[in-house]
Length: 197
Image (tube, rainbow, N blue to C red; front, side, top):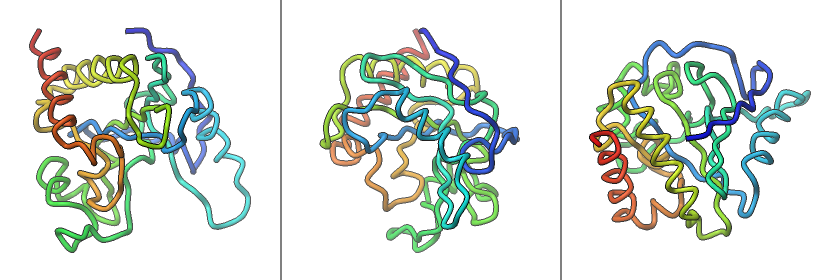
């Protein structure tokens, strides 16, 4: 696995420079910007540092996987990224975060004051079109990266791998796996096989 260091500068909007107190889950996303490269999405996160007027946008992830399977590290893995916070109510639980988030990530990280960002690693995946389907290269690299993170943090991929949708309950992210939950389950099993190999 080849990880390219592409760290962005510390700033309030995309790299707050805080260390996560613990790691409870790995959360996967789609970039929602069809056909763009990992570098273009990394540069977008970097550009948020230049905001000067409200409303301010907060967004980032520790990693971005590109269309050819390249992996960019956007910030040191142990730092907090702004990838799965919410102020919107989950339609199923009626609370800010889902029951899955409270069970897997923990009640203390599933509130308005201490978000799941403080206990998760975020991986953004590039995709060629608006369906959100991933290239084989992107999916393979994402599986390898997710497996290495699960090994590092002693996480069970069948429990602690989540989609952004699993955390907030309302976001169509990553679209391909939200609309095709059987393929999401297959991806988790693929990661689990890598963990136990």
